Amino acid sequence: MRCSLIAVALAVLPVLAHPAHALQVPLKQDRIESPEGTVTGYLFGRSLAVADFDGDGFDDLVAMEPGATAGGDLWAGRGWVLKGPAFNPVVKFEARGPEKEEYLGSGGCWTGDVNADGAVDILVGSYEYKVGSQLDVGRAHVFLGPDYTVDIVLQEPEPKGGAWFGFSGVLADFDGDSRDDVLVSANRADVRQPAGVIVEGAGKIWLWNALSLFDPMSLKKPVLIGDPQPLKDGAFGSVLAVEELSGQPPLDLLVTRNASTCCPFTEGDVYVFDGLGPGILDKAGQSSLDGVDAVGSDIDLADVTGDGVLDLVLGAPLSDLLACQDAGRVVVLEGPDFDRLAFSLESPFACTGSYWLFGAKGLVLDLDRDGDQDIVCKDPVSTLSSFDLVEVFWGPAYDSFESLGDEGAPAHFIGLGVSMVSGDFDGDGFDELAFGAIHGNASGCVYIYDPQTLTADASEVPVSTGGDVTFTLRMAPEDHGKAFVAGLGVSSSKPGIVLGPGSFVPLNPDAVTFAGLALLTSPLLEGFLGRLDQSASASFTLHLPPGFPAPLIGQTLTVAAVVIEPDGRLGAGSSAAEVLLAP
Image (cartoon, rainbow, N blue to C red; front, side, top):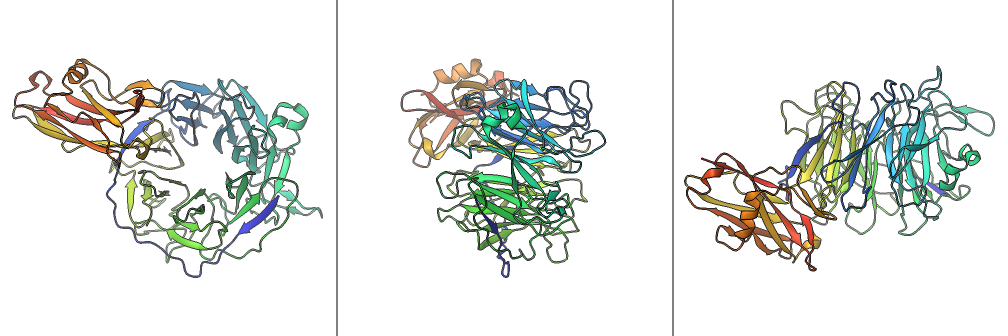
């Protein structure tokens, strides 16, 4: 295994200005609470993961609830699989023999397939698990799909208090046997060096080959992946990421050190392990990341600079900015060598105190499907205030932003972005954002931000005088040139209807729906049956004559569209647009 240490001097650090941005695809916020109701201290949504568990074309959401009571044990923790597109039905899972104060999922959760049976398995870290009087020993579980009633318990070979085993993890096929292997970090574990010297809090990572999970003897003998240069309180393994950096196997492993915002250290490093074969073949020299502290608190890989090569996007939440201590920033290192800093991002709001911690969590994705990657960052605004925001910086220039989380002002979302994932839950070709939030009583919830692919130029129309409402439809780029049909109803957009694999329309069919289908070619519904242009866009207009439809006064008209595939199947559905039928 070849290991290199990413390090670059920040002598001149480009920082971008941030004018506001008009969304090409607006985002609508929705909220998910624990299926069994909100309970103080349960922390629903503390960690999240995404996968299509049932192969129906809709991504599903894993949400951990580490403070929940399970099996009668307080704070044992539990998890949920919430099925897209409506996040219902749900599957609850918990450890076999739940233990008090394990806080299942406090470290995180990750998805994969460890036994190649086609079912999604879930790795869950519980770094706060205690053994007797030893606190924060930690352990992890692999829950086997599809029903998650069986779990494989993973522990350090020599468990010790304060090791935080289960703080981070990943499921990935490192050896090419079509089974995902398991990596779990103990990022505060002590490390014994060959000379017998103990390096406290240096951190380590353990690797289980997928087959070893099902062999009782091998289960107790994982492979150790250590920091080539252990440091006291180094926290090696705070964050793990996997990618084929060369574009071909084997997978490369990225590991952060000195990156956790919960511990008293400053600068951070990122190691790249080229495959996971035996030994370390070489290691690059180290230099400091001047002015960038806790670098690697979160990692993502994407082509941010637009040159066709993956870049490394790193959170650095303990970075000082002028007089603002630990204000935080996000740094972008150009690929393929990650030895040149492209630019950094900072909070668009003026720093008002210490411990801002901007960039502690983040994502990179093409949110508006314009072909350019966008950067999503947690922005606490100030940890002394009562709310958090999440900023979306729009590519390719990243000089404009959109703030999420202030929709309910002044009742802001406390702890928004404590966890972040993205997935196409409704099958429309646009990823939704899912953010965990703590809330004041630590009950927790998940906020979903859904790109709106159908918008209306009016929120209401007076029935007495009549009027026109024009709808703008913008579907995913791959749907360009396809036919579509729009429908309407007055029975709300929830829960909606699944029309087939990956085809969902947020519309509940009723008498108005069937009347509309009969009037598709009438002047009332101009363009409701049409074809998307080369940009996958279209518009259509509802023409209401005066006094029509009088029986529906006061009701809300829901309109949604669905793509028609070339073979006649129904494809992706749009979001819903709502229009009030006023008197």
